[in-house]
Length: 402
Image (cartoon, rainbow, N blue to C red; front, top):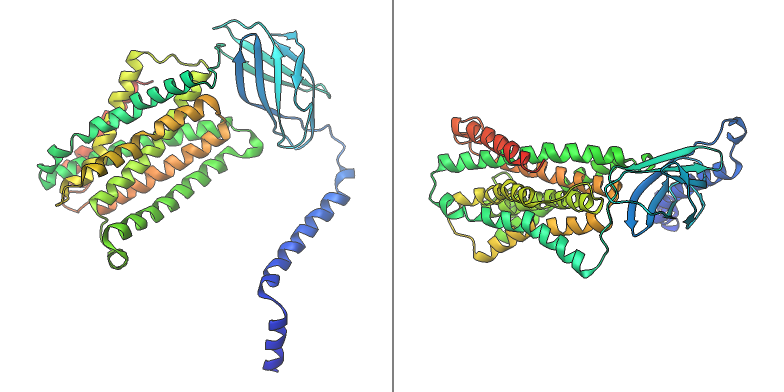
């Protein structure tokens, strides 16, 4: 009997056993779509929803990136700009579910004035979209790319690099004051976490409903936590060897590894910050002047202090290349974010990016708190003072960039 059962299992491959349920589910879905048993029960008008994901303004022309955000096909029949019918060109007049199209309208818009759009579908449904103040969208050329890069350097790379110069002072600080600065770092990152979550929720709300921006935010956050946990193990193996990584699972991670984790979390936040700034500049929503750039610089300088805070208690001084790498990991993503926000912004991917940033910062905060000693932790006098000082400092400097 046992031999017969083993013979049947040999003739029946294991991979086929895994594939059969998937094939059965796919067949069930296909049959339902083909025969549509509930189609005859629906006698209501189609649900037509169109989302405007991106607006590009060039000389005497307006380009709208559209997406069908509803369950039914949508046909664009007419377009109004500032309550006047306008001729238009569209890549695909009828959009299926989640399908995208590019609509272009020749219109002599004026800079600084509002623009109102009304897209009328074939069934008479009106989809409205507004621009508060029209501004020329920067072209993707060498000059604009360089300007966005310089902006990312000014508000991300340089401030973080300046903050790293606090390392020599931290080397001479006592354990009590190192605990204070670690708590100060928790306050900084805690403020960034709240700010990132708030911005992520706003972007999730602006995401087309069919793409479920809140789920994208959550996927990014969970993915960042899992990714940083794997990154931590990788760094520990590189630093101590596989045997030390296994035996030291219950102990606190090294200061250098924690510094890299903090730099990664801050870098992902700065990616989102650059994304928001680039998108705002492209849409003409803000004008970055000297005062605002200085505000960003002061606000982000403390991020360098947060990165080097775990290194104060390290016996061996890290090499100069580690400081260069830490500054690049934390600051350079601001440049990438500015490019992405200026040239290819979409609320859905922005919500995902802010979710990644939020998850990374939360993971780093947990790692710092876990590694702090009981005597010099958040519950101590200096620890509590450092936590509140970090929160208050980020709030005050954040007012300069509001």
